[in-house]
Image (cartoon, rainbow, N blue to C red; front, side, top):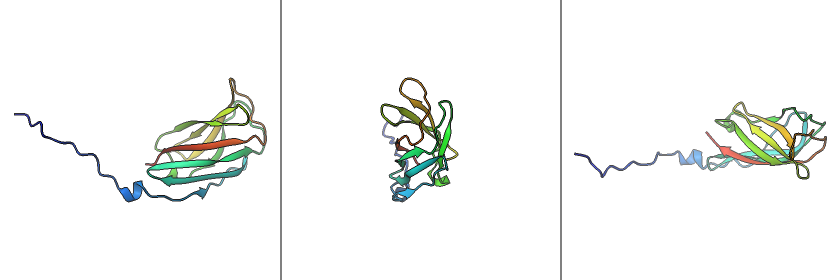
Length: 129
């Protein structure tokens, strides 16, 4: 006989961990970039926000590391994000499992060099472990 009254309960989460808020913290950037980049963990997600500028021009085919996230703030799988560059330009910001935040593929319809001093806006999030 089949029992149709079986209920599957959702997994139990550690609410203190999943809903904890670390507040915004400054992220140290590589020497290739300047300005402010911040990160936080809140509600089971990692948030990264700020506006950065390359110190020198970055060639069109170059992948450049902006910063490295602390271990407890790294994605469990690579997170690909499209962000706003200067003017109509966009760029990819990749958050890798090793914690590196990498800028690449700047432009509108084709990749162009990222000019020194170009404003690059970052506002991304991804699931926390």
